[in-house]
Amino acid sequence: MTTVRTARRTHGFTESVIREMTRVANEHGAINLAQGFPDFPCPDVLKEAACAAIRADVNQYAVTWGSPRLRRAIAASYARWYGMEVDEAREVTVTCGATEAMASALMAVINPGDEVLIFEPFYENYGPDAILCGAVPVWIPLDTDRPLDLDRLEAAVTTRTRAIVLNTPNNPTGQVFKRAELEGLAQLCQRHDLIAFTDEIYEHILYEGTHIPLATIPGMRERTVTISGASKTFSITGWRIGTIVAPEDLTLAIRKVHDFLTVGAPAPLQEACAVAMETLGDDYYAGLATAYGERREVLVSALLSAGFRCEPPAGAYYVLADFSAISDLDDDAFARWLTRGADGRMERGVASVPGSSFFHDPVLGRRLVRFAFCKQTDTLREAGEQLRQLAG
Ligand code: GLN
Image (cartoon, rainbow, N blue to C red):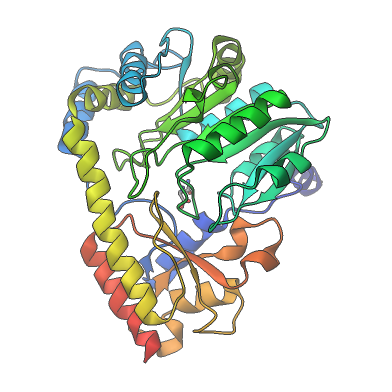
């Protein structure tokens, strides 16, 4: 039966809870603080450039690994932000979002039976990505209040370990990894000949510290696949423009997988992203972080007064909040209850993501939910008013 074959193909993971909570939010007319996408417009320059590209009939496939103009803009951006020298002809691939970037990159490099180290709590795609490669995800607990525990990480390395996935700024914890942590990680990767896959999609959304690409740490450029994209930086999650910077040998393999998976990312939208990267100055990027900093304050103070326990994140746009003082429900039931309007205790529901979706063992996330604050301040204030009603 077809269902049996399908089940085999998806063995080991279930549907995305993040995307599911958006559907539940829509069903209940709730304020959606679940899936991380902005509810505010993107910069005009992107809209104008996208329309102009379509009017100029940029309608056919772009070069498979990315339009030359966009790859040039990406290389220029890495040089400008991080002093990183990138060859746009040999080291850059444009994909359908960072999601495809991570999947294509892992598929190109990881063999069945390999082990992939993944920190948890994790963004929920990494485990399924590893499983799609026939690899084994190995979960490494991440402490939010202490520096990276390199001994614990090293203890998890075996002869089969091939790679590590690092997400900084981190979804869902908001951690921004520091230079000393990255240096330790770099030494470990070199000692054990590991490839690092970094998800740096929130690179411009940070409140404390600096974003340091792992590829800029000595010895890492040749063994790091740096993934990012336009979704979060330009508030265009639906455009699906992701980017990969990797050394030539890895890029050759990644481009093949990318080609057979998607052929290429949307051509006119690639042109628009190139224009945005060429035109937007430092004030845009600084303004993005400042605006998110304000949204962070609105959400965190509302959560604290509603009775949640949480810390303001150092980067990205999520707050992982402990709801033990509010309810005895488990995280799934609590998130659904909140989305329904807490059964009459709130006028309007607020959707979040159950904490268990960020852990391999659901028990570890049972007292947690994640809220996204990539929303207009008014949306967050309204959500705050609703949540405060929980405190009675
Ligand atoms: N990264 C965002 C989140 O964690 C959106 C994920 C997605 O659905 N692509 O909510």
